[in-house]
Length: 110
Image (cartoon, rainbow, N blue to C red):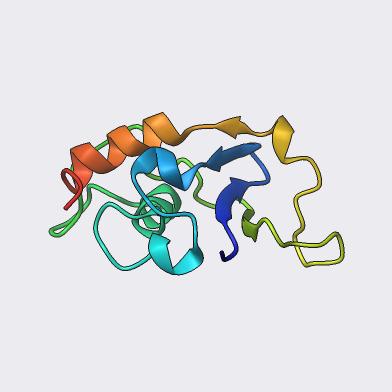
């Protein structure tokens, strides 16, 4: 079966649901290609897009999480784990915005 992971922003109380951006839920299914959760995270954390060659098309969500505390938590996480998210139901799902950001900046899914 495997462990399913989501990405949480502790400071903004937001999260990414991988299935809603056409990713699998297992950690390895969310890395290594353009329309992945890891690509979304990289763009969310970027603090200087649009200032040089090789940057991506502007989008309001690029840099949105720069400087924030981020946790990638699986459903097998336990309360003693570092950065444990105790109340994930209180976080806001921003996956549709992230899916749009990825489509604008890196194109459609492969």
